[in-house]
Image (cartoon, rainbow, N blue to C red; front, side):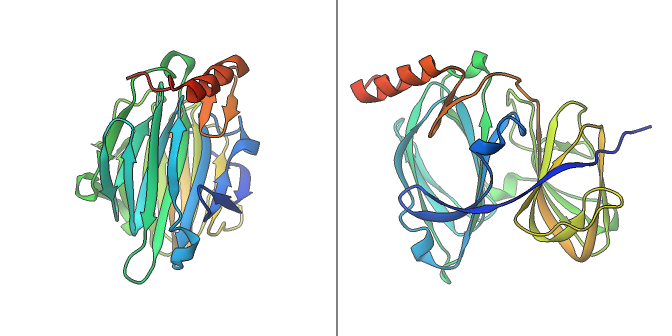
Length: 283
């Protein structure tokens, strides 16, 4: 018999200023480490006012992590130290493995009406992979499969598997799953997850009951689940939409300096010195 996960903890997102002055909501971050291991940070940038985001995220370094960007409305132009450049728009995903180091910029642009809505998730890399070669998996919306389940539940499978349909993002060391789940009013979503993996949901529309007997949880809220091998989620009267994310915990020490996350303070000192003397990039 499957063990249905219950809600372990709930985090309300908090207003945060990042980059060159981007207003966003932080679902979780530095203060929640290591509760969401291997995940480090979740930001929700959601505005119809260009003044909230046009300053963007100018050139900055990353090392030791993966950054996962998912856009619902608007666009983000990006470029990096390896010469890559492009634009991700509505429904697109960029899964960037910073590894040994990359310097890049991300500059948001809204739709004609000014709307911008997207998310960035940071996932940690294990010590064995922190200095791997940087790489991208950039996935355009048409490549992301949608699975229709009972009760009219619709799931976009970015990473992981639903009903034997596998998402396009693959070969990630922490064995993650990243789903965009949309549920009609009062529908039920049942899903198998791996025992021992960290699992959380972030509510982006409506509200839902994430554990039997618990009250509905609404938008801009992170739901962290306890252990088990399955989920049962019931949408509220308005329906619900949420990001569902899971991954294998690393159980390693975390040393964090802005966009650089390593295992020890000595490794952070090395990264800072390399940034100063121009030896940060390894490729």
